[in-house]
Image 1: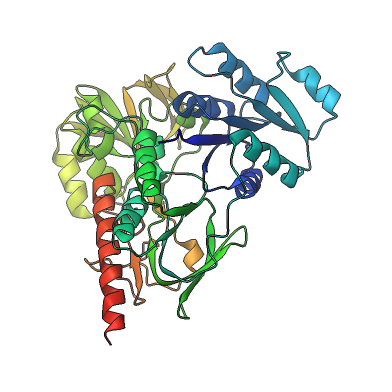
Image 2: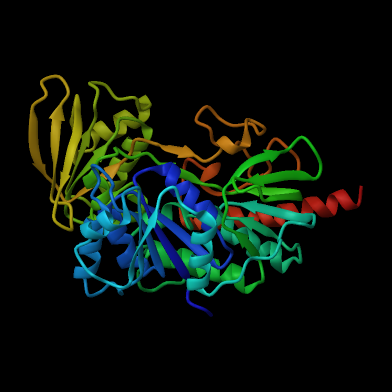
Length: 442
């Protein structure tokens, strides 16, 4: 099995990242993104990219030269080529670089995307991809997490020739999970990115085409269904499986990104085991926060819920359950100002929103429980959704539109586990197969 070919793009402007991801998308490449130097360093250490493309100046988030110093100082990270994007004169930009290194290149903005694409594809040793969408598909799967990678395995084995639109960032929420201990078949812990890479390899081994582009438009009012990406790639399908997941909401502070997977988490069920006999902080005041806090008491010695208001938003039954637990305490009218720790969380700085006073609190972990945002905006309201934007599907994954199925966190706001998402992906593929058979006999 060939080694996964990763490309890491780094910029604090999401628009630039989207442009790069779309321009470089290729079935044989996996493109991942980072928004600052620290995040880029962590990703480069974990995935060993083939190439890094980075803005040389990223105000407020650690510039490209900071990232370069971090990368070159760590012997665990291969000396991969780095391309710096710059709006400056190239000679002036070159003078900013701390090293005279032939593996470091500079390209001017605005970017010549055709030239950059050719360079990257040549470096990766990949040919221009064939047109994979010219024919009608029995099933198109949208997403790249556990549900989206399980569905094509079953669809391919049923000779449905599935096509997957995986976006440009593989793996969903598992890509920010440092260790997975609760996925069957792995006696030793496995990192989230490695687990997703193995799933993708299994999909590719079955000959399934994966297009690394974001779907931005679907038309569910016509048959066959129509799907279109941000790059203009289009496909038509008799059935669709929506498995685009949901993203955890974060505070948006620098230390949160830096310590993600090193004491900062958004999933108590996934990571609670690693916090045995530690004091941990849970951020939030809704049902999710109460569920996370209650679950964490199975492992942590103490759980402190930090809420920015003086009353909880959680349902009364969830509030009462948390309040009665002797391990749970509350800090009111307070926000997380910073998370401290050198490589591992060792505390938080709390800001009282009424007095503006900042105090320090020692803890071994911080769990964000301020909700999730399902990735459903591209559907344009064509499927029935609940008040939080999750797709409504029955226990067989059928949605409000016949022939359209939903699997994983895009429709599951209760469990949000890789194993349950994979099971739903299996169900969705089997249901799509049976739905097509029923249509053929009527």
